[in-house]
Length: 328
Ligand SMILES: Cc1cc2nc3c(=O)[nH]c(=O)nc-3n(C[C@H](O)[C@H](O)[C@H](O)COP(=O)(O)O)c2cc1C
Image 1 (spheres, rainbow, N blue to C red):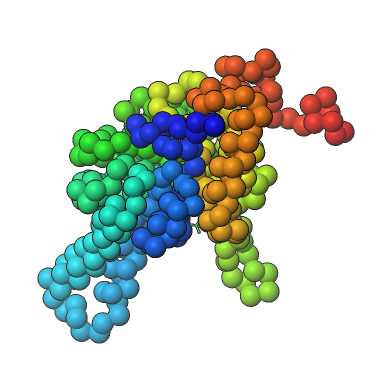
Image 2: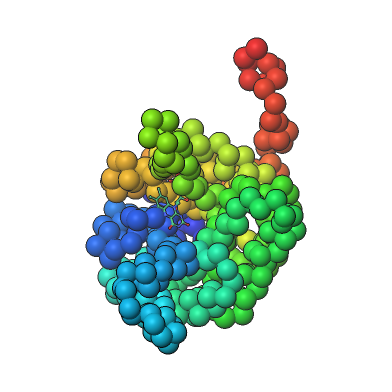
């Protein structure tokens, strides 16, 4: 019988499948279902600083004469912030009581100010690990890459001083020097890097002149980007890698492990087809391991990374030359 155990962020996981941060991981009931269906860990829905601020603003502008006094502003602001944070801490505590798999909390902040207290409170509530969902949209023409990237290091440095639980960073692929950035992040003492987050994408409704949301869920073809980068980076970084985006079936789990990921994070496929997909992926992985006579997951993690493949250039090719794509 194949041994699916893997190690990620210092956790021994019973298999490489983690349910990624999303609305699916925002309730204890769902987390119980996720564990029942065989997932090895969950990353909770991110606690968003923007979301908290939005709640604060909404509360502050809903009353008419509440805010004649500056003290009232402070009170409401602190209360609302506390309340949102408290709900999150309650989720962590509830999840820890209800399941045995590791619970990785997630924070997204747009400024560094509140990170520290959030991180510490999350640790105190019992989270086993912390994933920092950091994304600075490089949209301000006045800020160069170094300025944007320094925010990541500031955040990690501050959080690392505050918590002792393992910390991972989930990043996007929007870096001009992605490999260099990933390498430098892996030197900061983080235990895991998640490649890649996938974001809300805007679209335009041409009849109603509105900006709308599109492609909320990924498609299996989107695996390619993270697969390339996992394969190119896995042998070069000083932390574990989890692959995210486009993992929709057992074959894509296997591909990411072969590329060098220690674990995968899944979300869209579960939204589209239900939690049973976790069990199906595990079954496919076991069958494939039996077929290829692998006893342990570790026997093949990274077997197809850039360091190991016969032709490493295959991962570095980007242009559609006929020779490689077969299409003129
Ligand atoms: C509805 C939805 C909500 C999400 N919320 C979060 C979040 O709060 N924090 C986060 O880091 N990622 C969030 N994600 C991103 C997922 O964790 C994941 O990285 C992304 O969807 C790519 O994986 P997939 O192809 O398996 O969906 C969300 C994704 C979806 C679809």
